Amino acid sequence: MAEIKPPSTPPPATPPSTEPLYAGFTRFELELEFVQSLGNPFYLNHLASQHLLQDPAFVSYLDYLQYFTTQEYVSYLDYPGPTLKALELLQQERFRQDILSPEVAVALANTWAEESKRT
Image 1 (cartoon, rainbow, N blue to C red):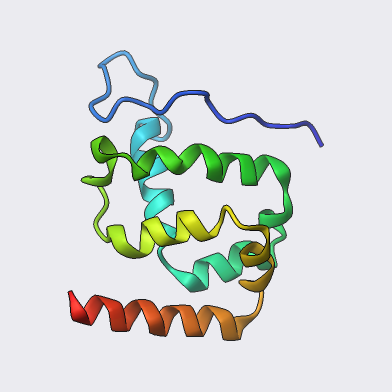
Image 2: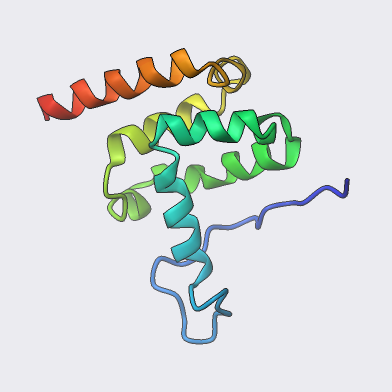
């Protein structure tokens, strides 16, 4: 399998009109949609069950998405708490292994639901 390297710099939040579109969306819009989906523990479980969390290229992409933790980009997140926590946890190999367990996904979903009630 050929190694896929993510872009070295994040896309601009406000894309220039010359940026190519992918199915009608900018790279930033696609990455935003994907990174927000990481706030769903059941989706994380699905990614783990597909062995994506063991793929070095995919793990590298997750690292690249850390740009969403910067002030410039965090404001675009609908649910920054779970999304940012997921990005943090996904940097840990142990978590990438543990999330394969449905019980871990359920516990994480319950924890994040309780935290969202408090805010």
